[in-house]
Amino acid sequence: MAFDLSQIGTVAAQIAANPKLQAEFWSNSIIEDSRDKCPLKDFVGGEDSGMPICEAKRAAIKNGGQKINMTVRASVLGQGVKGSAELKSKTSTLNYGSFNLTVDLRRFAISEEQLVKYFTQSGASESDRAALIYGLCRDWWTRTYTDDMQITLRNRAIYAADQPNVLRIGNGASKDEITLADTIDSDTIEDGANNLIGLGAMPMSLDTDASGSDVPEFLLYGPREFLDPLKNEQKYREAVLAASQGKGNDAVPFKGRYPQWDNNLVFKHNIVRETGPVRLGSPLAPYALLGVALANGSATSITGGGSWNADGTLTDATLFDFFSYFPAYPWTTYSTETFPTDSATHYAIIYNVSGANRGKYEIVSYVAAGNLGVTLTVTREVDADGQKTDLTAAGRYSNVHPSGSLVIPCNKLGVPINYALHMGGNALMVGKGGIEAQQIEHGDDFKAVGTENYHVKGYGIQTIAGYEPYTNADGIFPNFVLVEGAAPYRRLNLVDLSS
Image 1 (cartoon, rainbow, N blue to C red):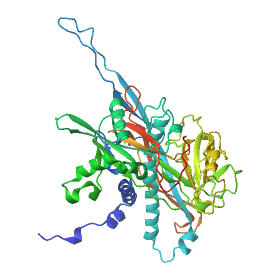
Image 2 (image 1 turned 60 degrees about the vertical axis):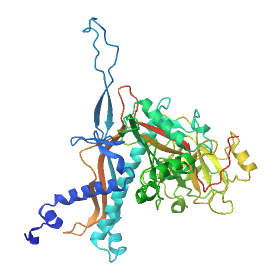
Image 3 (image 1 turned 90 degrees about the vertical axis):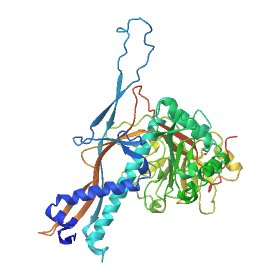
Image 4 (image 1 turned 45 degrees about the vertical axis):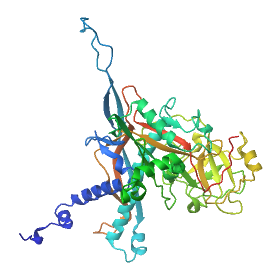
């Protein structure tokens, strides 16, 4: 049977017949492209999917700032009765709990002058310009969506009373007890799985062992450099290789499939350095580049942005949030969210990667109020626990730092701190509102009569979403554990200050 190709519709024809489809195609494309670029894409699913990230409810009637209520049921146990004992007065009752997921409107836009369009993009078509704007909006939404998920889980664990969801490598009472030797190993994976089981975590899936018993499966997700020490552990390396034997090109090392340890999937997330005056790293592995150079130990305002901000002129914290991944930054996912009180002292390394003092560094401290996102207000010359004294004795101290020096969160021992997420199913619930990845635009100032070309034009994206860890009827987060430990920055030569 021959096909009449003239009867096949085109996207252009559909849009011409119904202009509203242009916005729908744009939004749907953003949603799909963003999902493909999200590092957690393989672990996002709908309700009852068993995935760690659960897109729980899409409430078309929800607007920004509204709550999606989720009801959970407590377990029912008890001794029951035996023999001829009367039962009707000994029946159990159903107990319920609930938690709320607040969704809010998030917007992002790019503006340009009409002159930019006509004089700096000569030869570029309108479709080229539209593709550029589309790509920027897509990348913003992908990054925001991914960051919101990771920061929600990270902060809920860190700021919870008694930190039941924090697994600290080295078993110290606080982050400040972590040493350079406290890097991740297979024992940490097993401890994390045991913690999840103890919390009552829902596994991603169930496997069976040789005896036929159910074995729960969990996911360990973290930055590649933070998880790399696993490769140096002999028993882990041998287990991965043994699992690959006899599979040829399907072997884990060849295909890059997720290796397992004791039924825990290990997923190393590659953190690619972004270009431009933006936040760097990830919520699990933050860092920044020093903007304005430090000539001595007197300056207390630390700027970010590297060479993009060497003159310190980037001051709008809404646009330039260089330190927003750092501890104590009040990152919120909805406008009325109250950030927890943080009374701790936090630390950071300023490490020279260039110049006459290359390889030398200092440790600075700050409090929550000092992390403004665009800058850190710090205490210099920190020596309360001998940091400056010990670095100086080792010939490694400098308070002179060129623009572009690394700024990395650490503890008081100068140990860079990273995180990983050990998750079961339904670790994080994601709620969607009435709009998702909707295209927006704005025009301002004068325009030529009969045209739509305002002198200043803005294009952007808006979406309604919310995030909250699954909370059981006892009010705890059963489905994830935050692993906190030393980041093995192999390119940095750090002094062991723990002795």
